Image 1: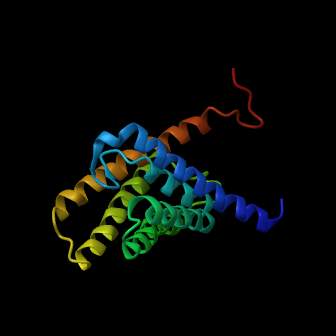
Image 2: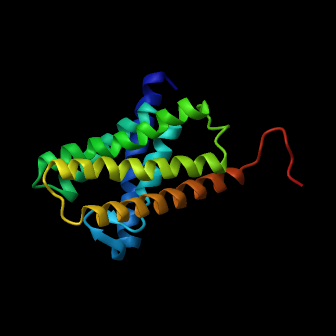
Length: 184
């Protein structure tokens, strides 16, 4: 597969998986919504973190495109400024976490040195960064109504969703046969 085609598939795949996770989250956890887009369990947060950990910049670009699509056409169709900024913020937080993981842990592209403990630390770091960036934006826009409560709920939703998605994927990967070893 050519390099350009691989980048396109990575970007498009991330966007599709993110939108699919958002749809699943809306179907299953719609009753846990505090305000539009803030849930007690938010599965797309795991896709955001995993997409950037696995694909780096390609994953971030796919998340940006998907975030803009859902923000402009679903969440905030009558607020283009919020949609534009929200898409960027939703992409910066997981990408920054990925960059920090590369710095702190020397994270390999195949995630071979990503232990369960490190995965937990990254999920927590992302779950702080995402609501923090969003709430800084909200405060700058003058929207300070329920700011602390909203931050805590967004943190909880991002963390629970990230942990569910990341550990499910990690568990599925652990069940795959390892080359060169037989299972007995």
